[in-house]
Amino acid sequence: MTFARFRALHHADEPLLLPCAWDHASAAALARAGFAAIGTTSLGVAAAAGKPDAGRATREETLTLARTATRLGIPVTVDIEAGFAEAPGEVADLVAELAGLGVAGVNLEDGRGDHLAGLPAQTRLVAVVKRRVPEVFLNARTDAFWLGLPDARAQALERARAYAEAGADGVFVPGASAERDIEALVAGAGVPLNVLVQPGVPVRRLAGLGVARLSYGSLLFRVALRAAVTTALAVAGGEPVTGEVPSYQEVEALHRYGPRTGDGT
Image 1: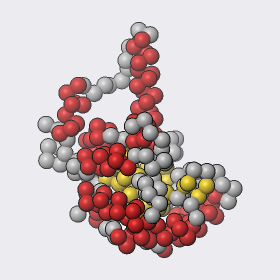
Image 2: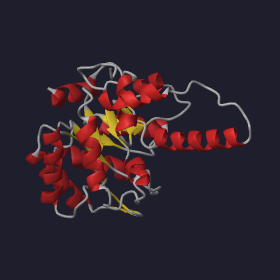
Image 3: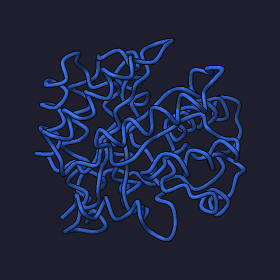
């Protein structure tokens, strides 16, 4: 089963490398590249749709991406921001709908603009979702470091433990990068720790610290935007396009890529 397969990837010898897609083409290309699982980036989904991130504006776009990404034959975890709803029951309904599509995991964040959600309320949200959809890997994200709080480590540890006790299967702490912070989170969370990839920091080093999952976040989307603009300007200036570029046929075949075709043909 996809759910068990995804869960097992968090307890392997090496951290789960989780690239994040923003549309079907990016999801299919990453699956074809051989990654064991893929995630989604809420920033990428929102920006591609001309909508704000973390503003509850992309529920339908997120579901649309989930419907196609889950056909690729590898586990998919979906960033649902803060749940696209206020009521815990409505968030649980969304996660149940995603599970019905074959989504193996979700990210659920506690950031609320420039502050964190109240801990009791967020803990209850985690518990309600897990009771409704126990098979889905719930990665509880805390934005204590992301918001630059002065007591970020203490806040992140408190919230990680609370979310784990409420049933979260893993915790995601974006912004945690210092080794002493990561070590403290690994030791104190009680569930697999997820951090963002850190360009220049070898995966083996983060593995040695005990990190279970490395998310690319919005990095690939942002790099793609830069590449598009850089290429457009280079062509306008008469410069050659460097690097390998996928052919029309390769990209057109992505809509057919899946477990039965393997290569989209």
